[in-house]
Length: 517
Image (tube, rainbow, N blue to C red; front, side, top):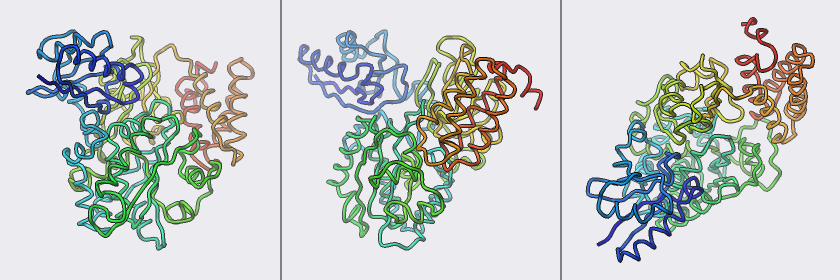
């Protein structure tokens, strides 16, 4: 007899014992005399059920979780007998949380072996690249533009326009750079896709190289992601051996190769020009624009810089065509967005869905409300520089323009939930302090404004001249928003001002800002 079991090697699962469970399963199999094949996959994204272990059956993969080492023997026996167990969840693909999703980018995550290029190809991998090679530059750019894909790193800039600009710029060398410096609190989608489906990122970057005439690529990964670094390096070597990277991509006349570069943990290096400075071996300082990276980027050459999720969306678009992708979403927000649900929630994890759900549906229905059972008071969308939304704004549709209309940001789609025990003046102070610590120091509004912001909010929290000091904070925010060189200083006002606007009572000003509306 034999059995195939799937155990995630995703960092979130490993953190709660996935490696130990794999060892325990091997020990039980040896004791029972059963031939056991363990496939280490990525995560399906249901973090509250990790480690979630699956077994192959004639009816599909059956999931169990959250598993512990102590459960290994009883789980093994239940899997062998296809029988009941307290941790049995059912057929993985039929689980309600997964079935409600529209998985385009994350369709392979938790399904395939991320180290196996054959497994990737068996799940339609590299079909997008092969079609791209047949289309050529104009055809690829047309598909990417018509798909409506916008940068998934936070800015939401149309990907097709960026690629066209690089393609139309003449140079002896061009580069593709993937920004994997995922530093926002409550975000983990980049890490998940790199650990669970690294080939989709490589394929997307390769298609970009073919489209714009770039022969070299770099993926800049934060040092705090050791598992992702190992996974990407292994996948790059496998893609090179299989002929999908190198002098002749997929047997074509196009050359493209890439490598991993590891950052040193500076949040500001998530800003594209600061990232380029770091890639070139210098301190991560923000560059003034223009020139844009599309004209003068890495080493002064035309460069495409996109986020991990942007590149990961490309293979689906090129395989199925622009229309298949653009049919999802609303308004100018096309396709799907992998929502990263975190904070005080019952069901935290990754939920990929088309744009258009309301914030309330995401928090109350999908996330299941707070873990503590207390009322939701605030939700921050878009990382530490995103605005805080109260329940009164839970009817906001999840799309770029709708959030912008209410002074919010979708950003990288990190969603952090807070219950009614949160002190919003502390959260505003944290935003200023975060900016002060992470600022590269190049521009005065960010460097000085954030430090003065911390000091002024401290005075407000002590009850010192509250109205006058709130006015100072507002003035500081205005200066930072319009005077900072990059989004670190420019976006810090979003959490601060939203906290002041929607939760004035936490600042000792119960009616001032509400009356101003």
